[in-house]
Length: 219
Image 1 (cartoon, rainbow, N blue to C red):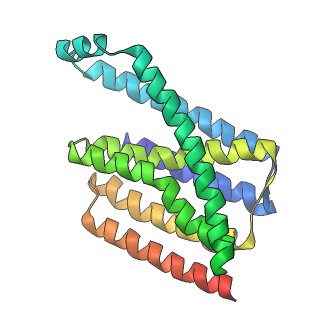
Image 2: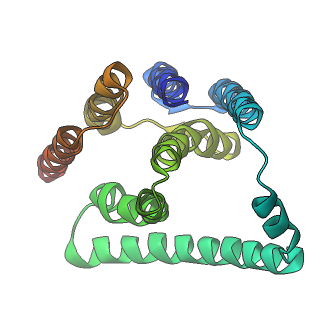
């Protein structure tokens, strides 16, 4: 499962970079990204089907599922979506105000504070999965979230309005994104395991990225 998602992530990044060579992601480009979204969903469906074939039915799990209160789950789901939308608006609006107040370019705020804020749900779910010894879920969540950010968020946004690709995005963001992804997937595909040194190297690379980003904006 990791290998297929890692390949899809790299393909999504490469396609995004190629589509962004003309400095804009328009509706035609969005359709291409939507195609990658379909491929990703089909791959997920096949992975789930294979997992179900290998798994043995558990009567305890079935009984627990029967006891679920569907109305309660649906209500919590809807409340969660509403809170996520409200939280996202507060995060973006106040992030912009902070940037204006302290004189920091909005680009730095969006790529640091807001990016961290929008990544917190993935971080919490990954830590929870690792604590419960569901390591595959944590890795799948990280790769899946990044794929969906590229092939769904960017494509849907570009359907509404063309998304410009700034020079800084092409010269700084894209190269660092590729480096970070390669640090994650190449050793993991070879050894079938994520090592601590990969995490430390990715943190160092991210700090270097922030430093380069700061230098880019203060020029």
